[in-house]
Amino acid sequence: NTAPVVKNGLAAFRMEVYNQGNVSVANIGIVNYLGSAYTFQAADNPGWIHNGGKVYTTLGNALPPGGSASIELVLRVVHSDPQALINRAEVYSMKDVNGGVLKDFDSTPDDEVSNDAGGLVYSFADDWLGGDGTTDEDDADPATVSVFDLALILTTDQQLPVKGEQDVLFHLTVCNQGTVAAHDIGVVYYMPS
Image 1 (cartoon, rainbow, N blue to C red):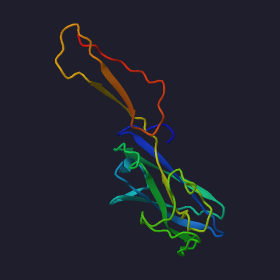
Image 2 (image 1 turned 120 degrees about the vertical axis):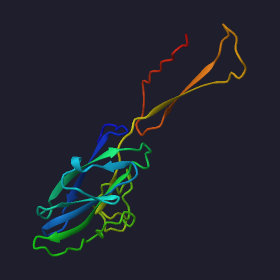
Image 3 (image 1 turned 60 degrees about the vertical axis):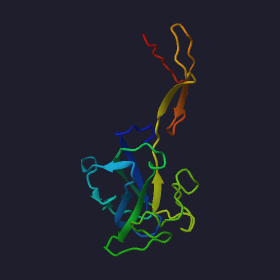
């Protein structure tokens, strides 16, 4: 997603899998780790299977050396905390075209979210395909969505009762609770009758 998402809205994540090796790869297993910010609905995701806090799918077509394939996952946003909005996916298994299990050259495919080096959102290792697996295991990668969330706080320093026709000073504070810069903000104050 490039547009900001809203609570209870849908966020689409596209995963791109690259074959950096010199043999064709088939039956590539992908796991997506569901964080607290998202829920999974099978109707939105044909071919994905929900199991605990993870969803799984398999890219069945052979991927030749230097080739790539993409797959999409649609999740519902149920939380607006920017840290909780980080979504993670990983290649957890792969086979050659004859069904033999393959070992990756610079990463260890599995379905454990916390054991991969690198992969911090917006860091140099985000979406990085180079390296030897010590700085960033390129079989796993995070992504996040943008949130536009403004809040208005109305306060006054007035503590004593007021009389008719007496002026009262109010303070308006606009807070940006999202991840997107806000500008040209309009505020309406409704005067009591």
